[in-house]
Amino acid sequence: RNTGQTCVCANRIFVQEGVYDAFAEKLTSEVAKMKVGQGTEPGVMQGPLINEAAVAKVEAHVKDAVAHGARILLGGKRHALGGTFFEPTVLADATTDMLLTREETFGPVAALFRFKTEDEVVELANDTNAGLAAYFYARDIGRCWRVAEQLEYGLVGINEGVISTEVAPFGGYKESGLGREGSHHGIDDFLEMKYMFMGGLDS
Image (cartoon, rainbow, N blue to C red):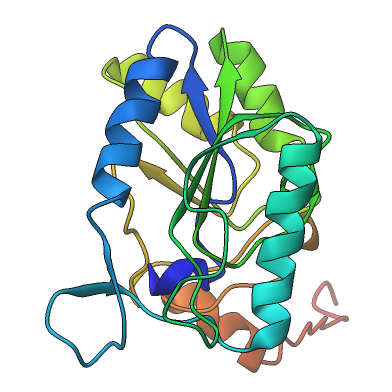
């Protein structure tokens, strides 16, 4: 989505260890089909990054991840098109000591983390100073609501990856900001509240 350059893009992808290898293989296969180029060209799925600084940040995150044990399954470098194009990238064996765990990459990098249990992945997901958007997939309806309620994020997508709409409150937890935009809650910051107390009513 916008080459990973939106605030609600997934920065960390947690995959249950029982399906990790199969998921990584399927994801890599699909990402490899993405056509990179100018947005005006037919079939293009990914365009350039906004500037050279953005490319340098993505490069730094990939380099740091590899230095900490990540494996590049796809991409990982500047695109042959030149300019600010970067290859769609999939990283396996991501860990919490990597830069991309603590900083937004804002680029076309899918970093795959392993987890075993529900409690573990909720703890991992919440271990961040940001909290704008989170997404997860599950079959059991009880698990869907249980996990959604535990995630410390302002927006949570359950079995859905595109959830923003003007009729719903948009905003985050923690350092992702205060207040909301969208819906009637988005009007609150533009209103003035008045408290009035009238005395003498008992006489």
